[in-house]
Length: 184
Length: 184
Image 1 (tube, one colour):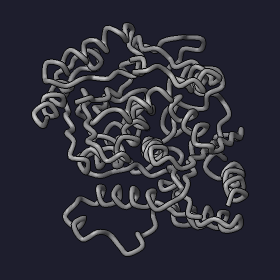
Image 2 (cartoon, rainbow over the protein chains, first blue to last red):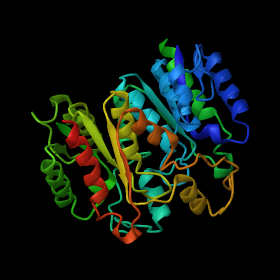
Image 3 (cartoon, chains in turn yellow, cyan):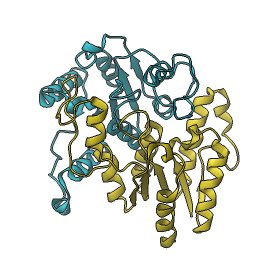
């Protein structure tokens, strides 16, 4: 079973080593991990040649997602209270395909707490621009994300690690992989 | 033609008035704007009753998107360098359905400039955690977002407004609507 590995892991200092580590964990549980950095089977489509590099990457990622039976997203908060935007896009994309989407995060503080910290309003209901803070008990991120994982039959695994370890530790990821692996 | 109106506009102080304003602009161009705040035609599905409120909202939004022929997303940066996470999820969802996705933003600074400002690294290539900054010329947000709009045949409209007006001015939105309206 092919599983797309969404996440800002591609921005880590050695993204190919990270992809290899994620794929190795997948293999241990009988899954084939597909990284956004993988070339496409059969290569890029000929008419992508005229596209800018960024758009070719996106076409490749969409094709990878289409080719996978499930998606696992690294939802560890990235430059703000929410997960990485590209990761969230890909989660929504796979959700629309009706296949299982799973998520993992190494930050246990709920979304409302992280948002309040980000907005520097410890008990506030609105940010400095007067916009409402999304406040539903226990959600890990924007409700579309948590709900998609639940509705798709996927797993959300939350660990609480010091920020310095948030991009290293793969135990939460492996829990997602193991759960998907048991379904094969 | 039904068009889903994705955006953090639902967090504005009077979200129903905002939804009405967006719908009125759609109507002027012969489109039916569908707000995330709209009840579903036919109501919620019976088995949603046991879901928490947040998950019922998400199911409703997914059903709304499925019922629409196109999506227009308010991509004005929201609590970080990127657009609102819920909006990005919905954009990815509609992109997977293969229908046109459009975006508008009232912030003209490109994604790389906003990310550098956010990370307080004026000319940097990496953030304080050692993670790469996505640096492709001219992109308005994460490459999945810009590329999805282009690949779907949608429009991306960028205006440059002072932040204080970013949540009020609807000229960029109307440009998206007018463009979709001409295609009917």
